[in-house]
Image (cartoon, rainbow, N blue to C red):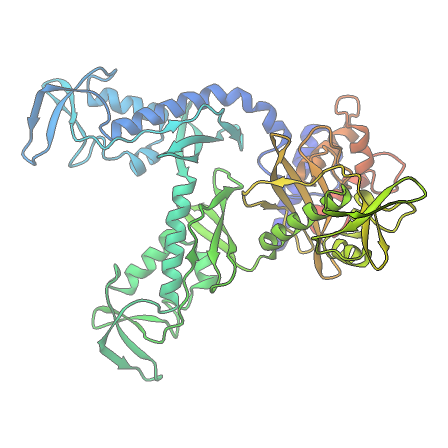
Length: 571
């Protein structure tokens, strides 16, 4: 499988290179969202707005949230009250069906709006040559925000809309997959990410408890099998057989994930649950399990038409709250959990590193407490005073702290002036830590939002953190590497256009290395006049035989780095 994937990766790179008339040297997996896609996104904005309006209207129709002429109301044989639909463009169920089919695929209609028409108990009927509907309204509809929807994953026959809306007072995001169907752009599927996240988190918690036998049993039915295992009838559950249990698991978890984590529940040579006397029985030996989610709302990231990531906080056996990353994919028309990571040091370590970076930044700016009664002026005219109310008591403690959280490269590039220079900010004086009292401020006002973890590799990952940049929301990207067995910050870059990334391999200066950089360098090598790069971008990507300009060898190096063939790009 791995070999097949590499072949596919190479083919993707080759096809892109041929289409752009640039050299094809190797490849990494090309993401669906590329620079070329972003240029076309604006072309789909109007179509997206039209489809969002139609979806909102149809959802209101499905909920009966439209005007009725109550003077025409009658009750049918099933006790349902119907009335003539007023102030609408539809005069019959045929009109309504035609409209729905013009903006929604049949698959999506069958999945979400099949109750509107053509069922044994439809919401709308033709009566006396007019359109009538059930008057029992459930509301519905989507309160889209004024924020421009994001268009991504553009192909010749599909694209994805990610739109913000008000979900009963909370900001949420809707992902709509749009396809070209019989010459018309139609919505094929949608996902309310936050609601889907809550549903899947609840299901995961329940299945984990089931896997640990942490559910009620009717102990009066207990028996011991030939292997000495005690089984009893499962009580107070929605499942009556192993078939029910399996069906539920398969509705919220992919087969891959079930096989990886929950294969012992049913269908093995030694299952936890069995069918006995036509009922569901389980082993009574309880291991506990389950995930104790906190009240903190999960965060949704990495949204595509077919997947998204949930970052959820949970209580890890009474210890400080920990974080779980849950990867969700669209499988057989259903959103399912495909993998989880409960032991990622990234989130926890990311928070530690953000705090540490802030502390070091304060140090660098001299924004610490001083005992001004100890102040003196050195021969260079710098005023020093004793640092107080601090975890740092000596230059040695400052050095240890920085080296514990920052690589030597990061210290040299940004914080070399703190200690150990000809003109340091901090010195040891009379056995304690003294510092220059001229404070420049500094520090990062990090938001409460959990940082996003991206580009995870065996020896590196990126942190994207939100912070208040003097009243403006900005984002900081921290590149973290495994250095002497410890995750340390190796470089940082801000979303501020005035900041310039000096990260090797970063052609577009966005603070991290990805497929967009490969495309940018390849385009430049193919035609520098039409595909210019900044001076810093060229410096960053002149990796092989530095000084000879950008070549196919530099493209290859970046691709090999992204494909984990090499683990570090030379500076």
